[in-house]
Image 1 (tube, rainbow, N blue to C red):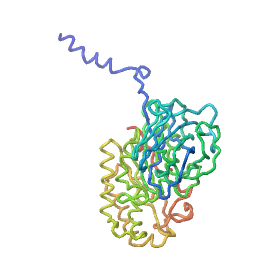
Image 2: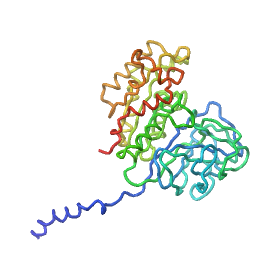
Image 3: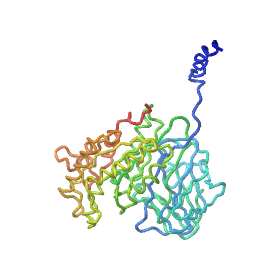
Image 4: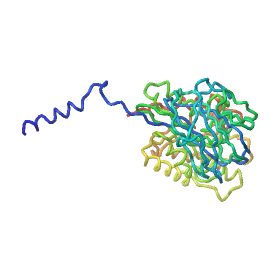
Length: 406
């Protein structure tokens, strides 16, 4: 017995040490590769017996795919009469041989209850990183597209009447830059793949960038992550909403209310980047909502809620100081007093140590000679939203080591 006890450490060591080729390879698992945060449409389009074809730009590739469809703001059941996914060949066309029929519990149709979400069954499809997928829905009933993602900066194609979900090219009668009902795409991967989620307002949406060219800073961050061997298995999903606030609704549900739905349940989420708070400072005065004025302390309190809730699920949380705003051509939008609040919030973000790291987009975007203003070289024209070069500078400023496994 004593001899056995003396040998036990050596036996355990022998089992623990194995050559790399003999170690267990992690099983397939799911990671979000794309998302579009649902919001209530201000003027919903009307659809009846028509097909939507929507284009998704992936961040991470995989060997299989599933799609999420949201009826978050609907008041009645949403009937999906048919749904397909395929590799996009550009525009409203798909790559031959790549079309896959989506099912839901083995059935080709589903009725999604008001306020609910549906996830498709898994379909095998080699999805490329930084590629485009075409997702098509046929809506057989008359429906108001109340659930949309506004200013998606990607062309959505809407057919005339008929089910064209499997068509090689959709004969489109209408196009928009919004997404309708489509809220996410997951891919199946092996190994240590994980996702970054970016929550924010119009800068995270990419407003001011060139439509259909995927020049939003989260897309450009995904490009950089893919080019680095230590981060090539990290996806980036965009949870931005134009005009979104942390503490109040107006354009989209407030960030604290949508955090669970748009961030914390993203498949494989490991990191969160927060760039939000300007709209909380600016909108009440600009839109005549004095009862929604918030203090610097309340904004900081909101950040604390986001940080605590994300960390509770194991996410690392990175924050950015707020971008410059002076010069925006909207009456009453910018004032010196609001600029003081922005600077106070930024000082707290930089110095409090509350975030796991600070990604200083304000320092990247501001004009050194006039720090309250956007650098002219990065100005899309409205003096607030960056152009493609500005969004590239934001992505280039992010330290990729923040997303490496430690």
